[in-house]
Amino acid sequence: MEYARDLGPWIQAQQAKGSNFTQTVVTLALQFGYAVPVAQRIVEAVLDHEGNSGRLVDESCGPAIDTASESTHLDLGDIHAQLVFEQLAPRIVLLDHFMTDAECAAICELAAPMMRDAVIAHGAGGTLRSDRAVRDADSAVLLKGSSPIVNQIDKRISMLTGWPVSHGEHLQVQRYRPDGRYAPHYDFFEANAERALRAGGQRVATLIVYLRSPDAGGATYLANLGMRIKPRRGSALFFTYPEADPQSGTLHAGDTVQHGEKWILTKWLRERAVESSGLNI
Ligand SMILES: O=C(O)CCC(=O)C(=O)O
Ligand SMILES: [Fe+2]
Image 1: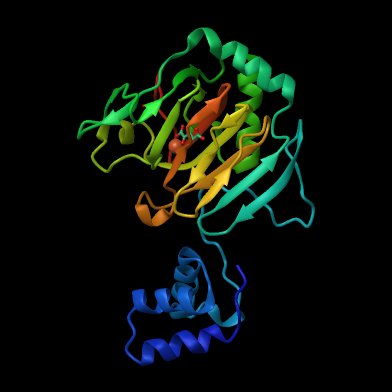
Image 2: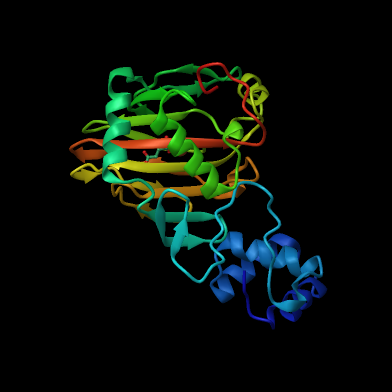
């Protein structure tokens, strides 16, 4: 992450004037136009004396898409995806051509007969149940190893993110019909969701692949950023939340589908190997 060199002395001066961490971050954001998560990382780096070079090193050791190359093509072995957009903090990457049209169609066909009401976690125990007021969609689980195409996509996601297949949940396909939506939420578990956390630790990243675009509506809305990602078949949206906290800036929603159907493939990545026989959590 690059930032103006003179910010180092400016931040030190703010601190010397008695500004606390939060005040310095907010002032940096308001006065210099940095997004708050970026401002936070700059202030952290400067105060840790790492900021002298004017360059921040991302120390996160979780799943990551390596976009350091000058090229917008990402060689994923069996396919070349194309980098469309990336944001550093919170980390968001949008790719085109992550799956071919034929692969999207094959995954939809595989999932269609297995569709059930999509569920959400409720209460302290994290009991799973359908609540269409929050998540109005159907969902199907594609167990790891259950078919060649599932293997292929799992491997491709692992290659993209540098994260082992073992540390990912089973793929899921979500289908939204007209009026279907997913209200704003975080993907990480509540701290008291013991059963889910025991299976492989916290969720740390989400990958969504758009399999079928609705005719209207159904964007993925990144609420903290005021950003809308339009579903386009074969494109993939990746975001990470190294801290399972609102500070991750990853509040997001599936906007209401107005016309047509929206189908997506989701992969949630965990801290550790996921020990689950069937269902995700
Ligand atoms: O439907 C979308 O665009 C977002 C889906 C989502 O956030 C989820 O399944 O957790
Ligand atoms: Fe989500």
